[in-house]
Image 1 (cartoon, helix red, strand yellow):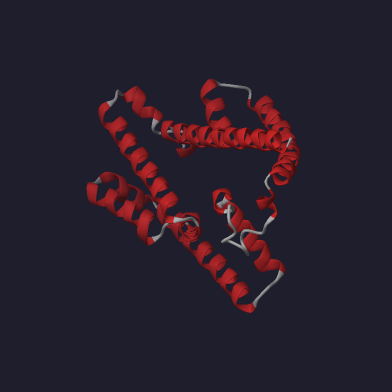
Image 2 (cartoon, rainbow, N blue to C red):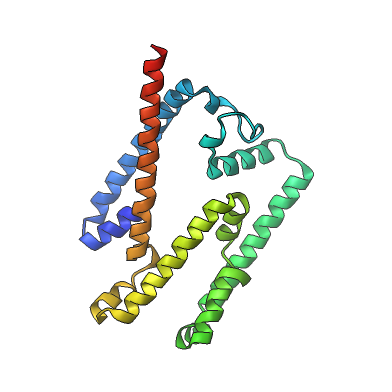
Length: 220
């Protein structure tokens, strides 16, 4: 929906009509997801195994998903509450809330905005604040449950996107620079990143479907 919003905004589409189609797509996707899940679980029995509790099951590694581990772990922690787990959960929520409040107060301060945009030391401090001192709660939790190789890829993409935007502002005409003033989720780098994610997802789905067809024919 974020990518549709960005693309639709650029193309000048009717946002009400676009949103209606998005709602239809979400409803169809929810139904199709259940059907595809049943199909794949029937063809690949390893998907029926709780990989959170049995991470070393042979063949399960290639189906590993950080988001799945996150959701299953959260559900297990809530449905089978343990004192230490609930205490850690409350602590995490509190820390995340305080960090985000601090980020909003600092980032929205007029004096800080001038400081962070006026000079190289200000921009450097702003980067350190974002990346080290007060990184967003989502970023810090993401780095906590996702494997290092995946985090490094995200890091490389973030650095590459930032360098591209800086080069765009420095070497292009004022008209092109204005494009960089769009909201972050509407920038060129965001759209390219969204396209890469979508392409990777489509490639993974294609590979899975090819394997599925091969499995069905081998059973016959």
